[in-house]
Image: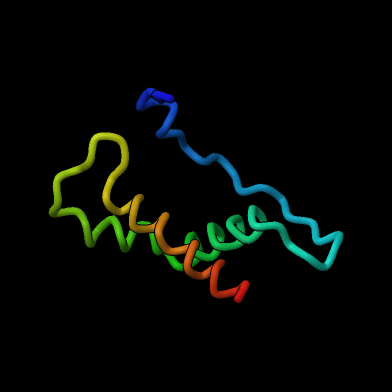
Length: 80
């Protein structure tokens, strides 16, 4: 399946509202929590400044790819 560049790169306008109705969280809600945590830390801007000297990729910047590689090991560690 081939996606256009505009389909792949879209702005995030707001984080979804979380309501804890059951004691268990789904994987998606865990990712939303990580997204909010990274925004609070300013992690994306910091990683972007680290990769600023490198040439940008065709669809994703190296900073975006790096930030997307952080949650999977953290989620895997939560489910041994």
